[in-house]
Amino acid sequence: MQTLIKNGLVFDGTPSPAKIAHILIQNDKIVNISEREISVAEDCKVIDAAGKWVMPGFIDNHTHYDGELLVAPSLSESVRHGVTTVMLGGCSLSFVCSDVEDCCDMFTRVEAFPREILYPILKKQKNWSTPQQWLDHINTLAIGPNIASFIGHSDIRTAVMGIDRALTKGEGPTETELKQMGDLLEDALDVGFVGISMQHNPWDKMDGRHWSKLLPAAYSKGKERNALTQIVRDRGAHLQGVPNLVNRVGALWYMFQSAGLFRKKALKTSMVAIMDLKGDPYIQSIISFLSSFFNKGLKADFRMQAFVVPFRVLAEGMELVIFEEFPAGELARHLSRDREKRDATLMDPAYRKQFKKHYKSKLTPKVWQRDFGDAYVIESPDKSMIGKSFMDIAKERKQHPVDTFLDLVVEMDKDILWETTVGNHDPSRYKKLYNNKNWVFGFADSGAHINNMAFYNFPLRVLRYVQVSHEKGEPLMSYEKAVWRLTKENADFFNLDAGHLAVGKRADITIIDPKKLSDEVHEYHNAPFLQDCDRLVNRNDDVVDLVMINGKIAWQYGEFTTTFGQEKFGQFLTAQHEYRQRNKSEESVKTEKHLEMV
Image (cartoon, rainbow, N blue to C red):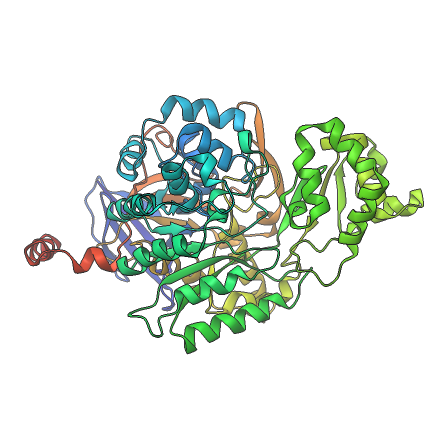
């Protein structure tokens, strides 16, 4: 089967200048790219992309689609926005080795995914406990985009030690257990996992039987972490990490792990996440300096995962992870399963005094700016509150804003919906964020926090910000560089063969109509998700003309094709680690070269 995309402005995924060209696809591969017309057979499908941008499908390098992949494997909310490759298994969480209940307990609270939807499906489906078995199952699904994955440290720790010991402070694995964890990591790398994801963050808490315990990986010590990291380093694979977001000291551990000075080589390492924070306006410059120091001075290969659009979050009452960053908020979240007890605590004057102390603290590191004057009511049983900040309401009530907020949570619970923008609030300051070579674009958390955040279309939003900057005559960067940062740069850093339009490459292609790339891409909507559950999304379905995955058209002219969601479009992408290349026999290398020539 042949498809010809003609007359489009082709961005090949590199910083090279875009050019008007024609692309011929045979089955799943690009077989010709030419500025001259390409002759094709009569039965060739021809797509005229005149006036459109033709580019590699976008890469979303930080998702938590591990659950949704099993429930609704098309992952349609990403595909409709031009994403053709997603990466799973972040933040120490994967659904590979642990049993069903452990997987749910580790995932559903942290990632705010409905347990009542995930648990029964996972219980029915899960018959795997090794990376190869997980991959065999994934290959049976009608997956939409291509999939790549980390193996989660919490996952393998729990599978080997058991959930109770994995969550016991000071309890480390025995030598035998550490060897078993290493073997599971090796098995994952053997079948093509990207690397391992680790976790230091005390925000992230368990659901279910071990409510409010930290994730298992957060209890691990240096010996365990170093042993697993050494395997990844030896294999030329990748380390992804979440530092302690409260004191941020763990960030240095990941940077030192990446350093290649006095070691045989650097370790590719990415860390979550960087943005222009309202609550800490200096952190971006500090982390940039440290990243440069490690990359240049200590020969590291370290990147921060940059969040590249406004970090707008929504909350129902106190159902938002940012409250976990200070003790009073953490306590309220812990008590959320017992509303009567929680409400009694919220009304306690001693508790309120403590909350106000944390709210006013200027010196402690923070992600949320802790400003109720910058938190606005969207929905409320009292319609007069809509559009007002909690500070506005507090002034009307002649109260401290903390008292007003806690009163409303007790009165309305989840019926009061509010929003705040935590960072990247000023697009005029994006130039430094977008051009820092120590960052890699991507921290969408797609598939998680389904009622709190919506960043599935972040590549389109980036292109819109770049487009507006060009229209103003003050370009943030070239369009070519923006496309590269959203595609091939990501793929190369994570050792994936993706994000590049070239002869012989897989045909993962997105076509965008720049005339329809408007500010509507920033607008929020509620969309049906699963079992009468909605999720928060950004949508403008006119922008993306076509999405092709492995040579098959998944989306065209504002709707999915009839077979999308019914059959397999994407594939599992095997990470191209150095070890896998070095240890191939000479005969196998010759065979591969012969096949490439053929």
